[in-house]
Image (cartoon, helix red, strand yellow):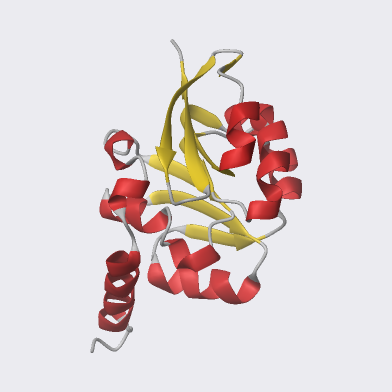
Length: 171
């Protein structure tokens, strides 16, 4: 093992990757994106989303989660990413309209999906191109087909109860 723990972190990412299923994330949208904002990023240590961004070579990543222990682990797993401990909603309200990333991904806890959907204008204000929002099946019918210059382009099945809803900015 390298003195800096690189081998250990690489092996840990391999284990996360082995549990991840790229068919359940819109990985085909990742090429061409160079920056990303991952909200609620630390759950499952990025298995649902972060590992796919890492594998796509996206290194300009800002991650936000309120779980300090998991954020500490994420910082080691994804070196070079800026991952901060904060309440996602407060953080987003402070940064909305002032900073943007090409891609914004939200993987909220299941009891937050309706709240996240209601805040779609906040998430789109943080994105230049794409927003990928995780939500429960029963919340998907409430997702608007469009919002301002944003259009829902697809729904990706994550598992039996949840989906990724993809919004793209229309030119």
